Length: 166
Image (cartoon, rainbow, N blue to C red; front, side):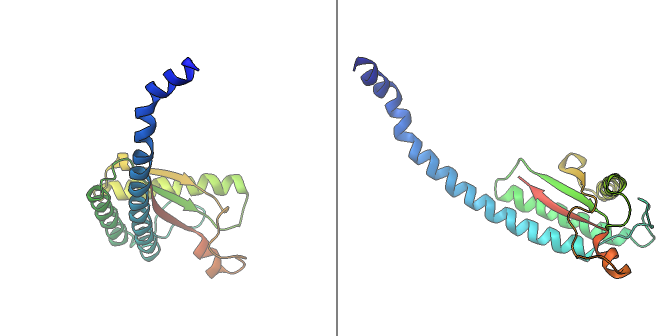
């Protein structure tokens, strides 16, 4: 009985604050979640609108990507400002590379990683802070269209996407 009473006396103030702290975290988490959704929606739209093409089976960009990557970099810079104004500090922009389903899975995974790395370099050249970006190669594991049995559908799956990760 004495141990229980002593435990309640010591832990009581902490337990009394816990529901309030929990409520603050929940409200803050909801606000951050809303900002994350807004930012990701815009980044996905911008990355789809500003797709840079790669030469077939390579990580070499075709000509004409400079302006697209500049618009994309500006979208990331704006997103960083929006996140900062919402009080969000610990985040990364994730650039994910994707391939079509042609070829071997391990080759596609490596190729998609190289393409994501190329886009990171392009974004950094355009003013995005390098430490704010992480890259991931997804290969053909998350196709936009299935089946990708035509050249147009394959082209849609050869892409990159950008999202913020909190």
